[in-house]
Amino acid sequence: MTPKRVVVVGGGTGGTILANKMVSLLRSETSEGKAEVHLFADSTEHVFSPGNLDIAFRGMVPASFRRREAALLNRRVVLHETAVNRIDLMNRTILYDSKVLNYDYLVLATGSVARPDVIEGLKEASHNFHTGQEDARKTWEALSRFSKGKLVVLTNIPHKCPPSPVEAVFLVEELMRERGLRDKVEIYYATPYTRAYPAPAIADVVEPLMEKRGIRLYNMFNTDYVDTKLRKVYSIEGEELEFDMLITVPPHRGADIVFRSEIGDAEGWIPTDRETMRYSNSDDVYVVGDATNIPISKSGVVAHLEAIVAAENITSDYFGTGKVYCYTGRINCPLELGGNRAVFVSATYEKPPTRQKPSEMKYLMKRTFASIYWEMLKGRLDPLFDLYFGKPYRVRVVEH
Amino acid sequence: MRRLVDARGSYCPGPLTELIKTYRNAELGDEIELLATDPAAKSDVSAWAKKSGNELVELKDEQGYFKIVVKVVRKGR
Ligand SMILES: Cc1cc2nc3c(=O)[nH]c(=O)nc-3n(C[C@H](O)[C@H](O)[C@H](O)COP(=O)(O)OP(=O)(O)OC[C@H]3O[C@@H](n4cnc5c(N)ncnc54)[C@H](O)[C@@H]3O)c2cc1C
Image 1 (cartoon, each protein chain N blue to C red):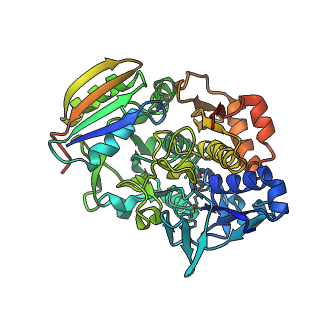
Image 2: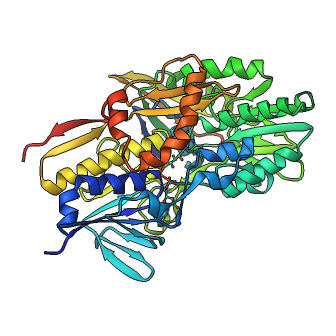
């Protein structure tokens, strides 16, 4: 009998968690050779992306936020350290290194890509901490040289990790104060939203703090283009902002392979059922994490919970149990406010985020997260999370 | 052309993100129909349409959600 094959594309947060969860749910099947779980990762190293904030704004060393992907996977996962070139849903195959591999179940966990190049002038004029560790390091170096003038933190949508630009501006402000340069630097925060943070309950906490720290807010500012000579950024709403240093969170797009395989929308987001994580109406293709077109925050937490839901649904289909696992839309993103304080942005598909008081406890929880991330990828902490938050899904039973 | 955007259940980053994503890919004269459950959507979209010079065509309470229609009459440069 040929083994049934689960193929996962993308070895980031979602893909790694999913592959590990998959071999644990299909434990006896994989050991008896009835099932195989393959993971394709286009990099040998796994980066903890939230660390980019520490690299760019605290000068921390990039290497401390990287691990070898192979060391994070259960040994029963078959790892291919190579990029997938094309996905062929009609023939249920993927193509890589001029080879073809059939799948019984396919999971797309190809993430999102920060693309400063899609807005005129933005790539040339800006510093980025969403485009990788190296650019985050360059942002730190540029900040180290910056001593006076206008510093603009500019957000563009869509982007992953909704809190990250707000965190960036608070950390920059703190840095300038610590260096004794605060009175020589004007700090601006420009955002596409009507307020400093999209969710009103969180903006109620963020806006007074921005005012207190002298951060000037430009809301409803959607970048049209950047004039690199005049050093000005223009919005489609008709405003302009002058800068001496521009730090941006660029608009994001889906991964290249989504465009190449023609499986996404105009921006490369893959159509996905927001509860079951199934691709369109198929029952053998799943999508998790940043790659989906679901209007939910693109975050590691979401990728994690969606990976659990997809793994449960594949297992259920594999054994024909008739159970359908439905994601509740739970999000839980830390937002650091400088001064060792943080809040958590928590919501579901049914409940908007609620107002909270910033605390040092929440800040410490965020810091701890950096060290438990690697264990979390292996699924060892899921029982603890379930105990604290409850399951991230509801179960429906479908009659055959 | 009418473009439908279903942002029901989205609170963070919320319906305005979906609207602006669609707006950027739309043509002058297109209408964007946004469905949302986020109570902030109504005032957010109205404020944004006003500031960006686009037209708020419809703002309606449906059962359990809002329907908001914006006509694209202005785009950036
Ligand atoms: C500065 C910053 C701060 C953040 N802070 C937080 C936070 O505090 N909390 C939080 O929850 N989230 C945070 N995030 C967001 C989080 O990192 C992402 O949302 C999360 O990594 C998404 O997981 P994913 O698996 O969907 O995508 P990724 O982790 O990006 O993984 C996708 C992987 O697929 C690979 N891939 C793409 N195409 C192919 C191909 N053809 N073949 C093989 N592999 C391919 C990519 O190279 C990548 O490794 C932050 C992000 C940034 C940048």
